[in-house]
Length: 102
Image (cartoon, rainbow, N blue to C red):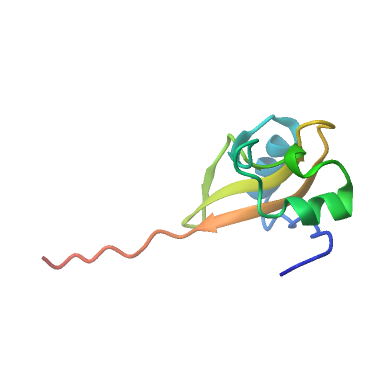
């Protein structure tokens, strides 16, 4: 398991650069972490960036794009008390090949 800070991903294209800019400028949607269910990375985030374990949530970009056949979205962590955002990553999902035989 990774213990230190994880650097931001670098965009591979202009489209990804624009997605990242939008993610950094927007609020995004929370996809993990709550008062009832703490984020798995919360202890590592506290050790590297501060705050309390319950402050950290995982976020998802509102904007999603299809780039070179992959659905691309941006994920990051946010401290809900300080609004600090860290560790922006691109998630690229490639659709499974569809069989044309029945």
